[in-house]
Image (tube, rainbow over all chains, first blue to last red; front, side, top):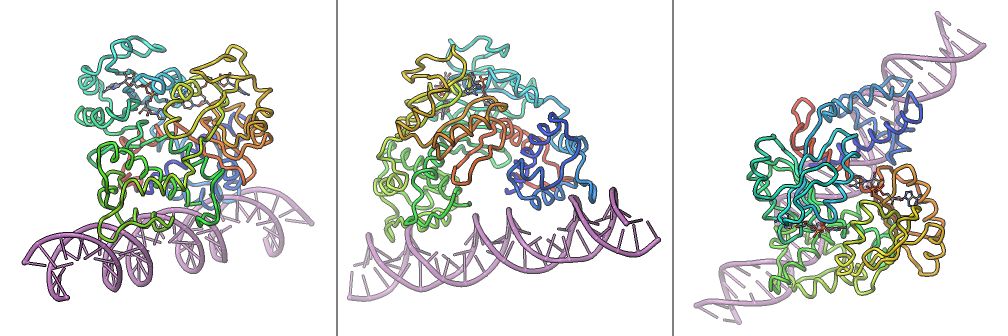
Length: 213
Length: 213
DNA sequence: ATGGTTATGTTATTATTTTCACAAAAAGTG
DNA sequence: CACTTTTTGTGAAAATAATAACATAACCAT
Ligand SMILES: NC(=O)c1ccc[n+]([C@@H]2O[C@H](COP(=O)([O-])OP(=O)(O)OC[C@H]3O[C@@H](n4cnc5c(N)ncnc54)[C@H](O)[C@@H]3O)[C@@H](O)[C@H]2O)c1
Ligand SMILES: NC(=O)c1ccc[n+]([C@@H]2O[C@H](COP(=O)([O-])OP(=O)(O)OC[C@H]3O[C@@H](n4cnc5c(N)ncnc54)[C@H](O)[C@@H]3O)[C@@H](O)[C@H]2O)c1
C-alpha cells in the first residue's frame, strides 16, 4: 500500500527535475533536489534505490538521465488516454486544462454525462451520453477514468465503470468508493483537504494533544 | 507530521456519519463506520481514543454525539471564511461550488486575480484585484487561502499571502511551495494524482518490485 | 441475580517508514 | 600518486503507524 507514497514522491521529483532542466541545470544532488521537493536527501536516495535508479558517486545525478529513468518507470512515452465522467464544475475545469495534461502525455479523450445539455464538445473533447460509455471504454481500451459526479450517483457510476473494465479511478465525489481490490481508487475530497488545512492553521490546540501539523 | 493523516481520517469519518444520519441511523459501531470509511475498526477506535472521544461499551457510538465531538474538534460551528487566489478553470469551479463548502461551514468570501477581465462577481463572490488582497486579509482576519494560479506565479503569490498574514494554503499549482514552517501548506497536484492512478492501474510490474498499490 | 454476549478502550506486538551512519567510489589537489 | 573532499548507496537503528489481543464495561436473556 505504501508504495503509493513512494510513487507520489517520484512524481514530485520528476516535476522538480523538469523545472531544474528548464532553468538550465544539468545535474542535481540528493540535497538540492530534496530542498526543492521538500524531502530529505536520504529519502530521495532511498526512493531511487528502491527503483534501481543510480547516480554518480560524487557527481550527483544527471538530470536528463534521471528523467529518462523516471519516464521509463511511468511509461511516459506512450500517450495515455483517460475518460471523464461528469462534466459539471470540476469536470469542465479538467476538460479545459487538457493541454496541461497533454504535456504530461495524459489525455482526456472523451467526457460522459447524463445531462443532455452537456452533450457537446468542450475544448475539442466530445462529451457523450452515459449509455455509450461501456462500449467506448471497451473499443478504445480505456483503463482509467476521472469521476466528477455528485456523491449520490458516485457509487453507481463507479460500478458501471468497473463493469466496463476500468482499472483505475480518480474520484472527486466526497464518498469512499467501494470496488474490487484490483481496481485502484483515489478519492480526492477537496472539502476535507480544505478543512484539514483550516484545522491545522487555526485550531491545532495543545489540549487536543496536537503538537504540530 | 503524521497527525495530519489522523485528522484526514476523522474528517472522513464525519463525512460518513453525516451520510449515516441522513439515512436515518442513530448509532454506529467501529466496524460499520470502518466498512463505510474504508478503515479498520481498530484504527477508528484508536483515532477516537487519540482525541478523547468515548463510545458506549456495548452500544457503539451515538451518531449525534460523535458528530458533536467532531464538530467541536474542527470548530464546525463557527463559519470559516477563506479566500481564493486565481479565478481561472479550477478557481471558477471552486467558486461555483461555494454552497457545497457552505454546508460544511466553509465559505469563499472573495476571489482575487490579476486579470482585469476576471474582476466581477462569480456566484455572488466578489472577485477583486490582487492589490487589495493584503488589506482584505487583514481587515477580515482571513487565515486560509486557496491558490489556483499558474505554477510560474505560485511562489510569488504564496509569499504575498504569507506577508499578508495567511496561516494556511491549499495550493493547486504543480510546485512545492516554500513558506515559513508555521504556515500550513497542502499541495494538491492533480496531474501527479492522475498519473499515480494510471501507474498503479497499468504499469505496476513485478520487475520493479511493485506488488500492489 | 447470573452467566453469556457484545463492542469498546487500551496495551502489546508487529510492520512499515524514516533517519542515521558510514563505507566506498569518484573527483579534485598538491 | 597519495591524500582530501564530496556525495552516493545501503544496512542498521530509531521512530511511527497499523494490527492484534484482550480485559472491561454494558447489556440481555433466563
Ligand atoms: N466543484 C468543486 O469545487 C467541488 C469541491 C469539492 C467537491 N466536489 C465534488 O465533486 C463532484 C462534482 O462537483 P461539481 O461541482 O463539478 O458538480 P456539478 O453538479 O457541477 O457536476 C456534476 C455533473 O455530473 C453529471 N452527472 C450527474 N449524475 C451523473 C451520472 N449518474 N452519470 C454521469 N454524469 C452524471 C451532472 O449532469 C453534472 O454535469 C461532486 O461530488 C462534488 O461534491 C466539487
Ligand atoms: N484546471 C485543471 O484541471 C488543473 C489540473 C491540474 C493542475 N492545475 C493547476 O492549477 C492551477 C490553476 O489552473 P487553471 O486551469 O485554473 O489555470 P487558469 O490559467 O485557467 O487560471 C489561472 C488564473 O490565475 C490568474 N493569475 C495568474 N497569475 C496571477 C497572480 N500572480 N495573481 C493572481 N492571479 C493570477 C489568471 O488570471 C487566471 O485567472 C495551475 O497551476 C495549474 O497547473 C489545474
